[in-house]
Image (cartoon, chains in turn blue, green):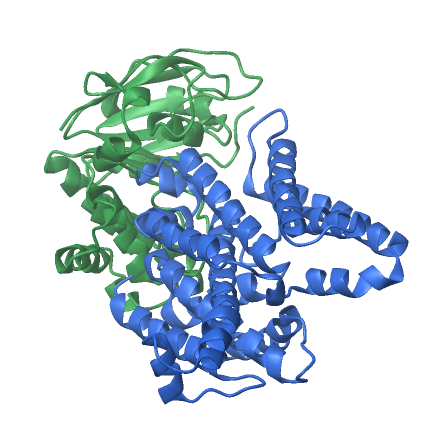
Length: 323
Length: 259
């Protein structure tokens, strides 16, 4: 809590910009830095304009927003559940979204309906877990966690069932969705705006969250209204995750690994960690998506595979190095 | 500062009769000790007084206002609590832990100032853990953690101190140092209300005593009225031998027990 907050954020913001620049330059047709700047200034050829502004930039921004949403949601869930293993999906939200999306795909509809169905599934999963965990009394983090894990297992069974009964030609699309794929992303604006709004909402709450991370009784004695804060965190984290899942399917590891990596480097001040998560999560997913596009071009990999392949060893290395 | 009152207070311990309702006043300058056997409800009483759990009946007042009607932030500016059990969430350093004591005093956008940092460091020095400032709390010994917890409340600087077994895990010297610190806080106009296991620390340092029986009965008053061997023997179900040393009674458990 004693370190300066702004410098790490500036560095991460620069890294994010560099990653976005790289991502829109690299691909089947390379674009140099000078051409890129020209296009952004409104010049350049029509081909370059279309390539960058209509094709690559929306996808890159969608990847950035998704990564940022997932990382912020993961950091919030970890504080809410006071469990370092929590991630945005731990309460079964991605399972609900996946069932929604797969059912839409099974019905043969596409585009917006898949997204809408996924979003509805995510919200249903959220309310289901919260209602069940609430039960007849009050909920505790461990009860919420257990309920979430069990409900997630239930969603998993339904997903397997849907995959088993689906016609073969629909399976690749479904699997890509399950592994997370930014190429579904259409308009990045809602996700980006939500990310920005969430940052402005949670950063002033950062110190209260720091206190909450020490346990609810300690937080209450230090003047935090624990129950309203926990509700707010739960709702915000669910909304962020639902939006991320709707934008790009269930991309794993970003929400677990990014907050932890940042904590290992910067300490655990949520006022720094939450905005840093937005930037670093976005950067990571932009880089992963760039790799996913170019590794076996012209074919594409699902970006969730890349985040896992990048995230797991990096995380293990940092953990091994830490005190 | 404002005194802490209870009116007809019955703490909520499941499956226990109401016993005697508490009508205490903890006034500035007083140093209260709560004595009672295991399970008598000492911790529950402290948590109820801090507003962390609702009472079964009656109310707690801070000054003339019911505690339950006050905003938590306002309460936390006047009332601090040293817990018996540490809840460990995420790893944090000793300095960060002490610094959260400033939380009640800062607005949401405000960062801790150099002044806040200085007060946290001073509190750590006062509890003799200043040299551990950069260590992670979960790597400390039990006694060191206890002192960090007290330093956190010292940083919070409330006028009313509630403490749950503040001498737990402390060696003899640090037990005395903590009691001296609390005594000096009381002399400076703060109020101290603590649960203690050690009768002799209570006899030595407290001016008011509350005896809490497992049945829910209670009696309270000035220390010299309360610390009589008969009352204490029935409280603990243990025969005691009383001797006088250094101007205070010292209670020693008799070898034979009580039959």
